[in-house]
Image (cartoon, rainbow, N blue to C red; front, side):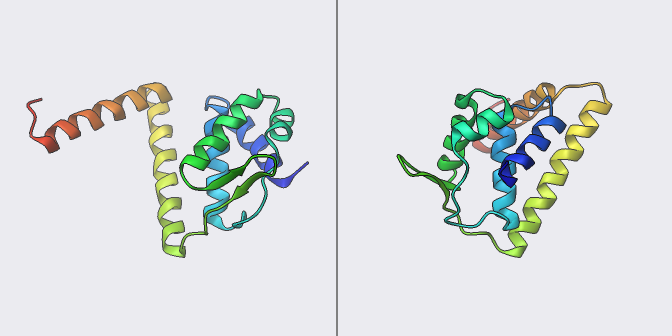
Length: 140
């Protein structure tokens, strides 16, 4: 089994409530940020990942498409999917680690209070909406 797929399988098992495509995006992004996936490296095929994780190939396709939209990977039809992002600086990696920790803490606190991830996301969406109106000077 490809080391990336092994790591994905562990994350998917650990984060049972999270969407699998999101876990794939997060894990690949994290590995690029940490430097364990290098620019030009070929990722396992959609089919390989889907079979190993026991999910629909469409789930993996969505993840790879999201990574492509973010500029992390390049998809070359007939050739594969390749890391296309240069690793960020140590300062940027540290910033991302701290942000990830903040997200994990917020999610943990949300669960402690008896709320779900969807509740947290809804609250953040509402906050974003209010902040946008405030920034534009719209009445709330």
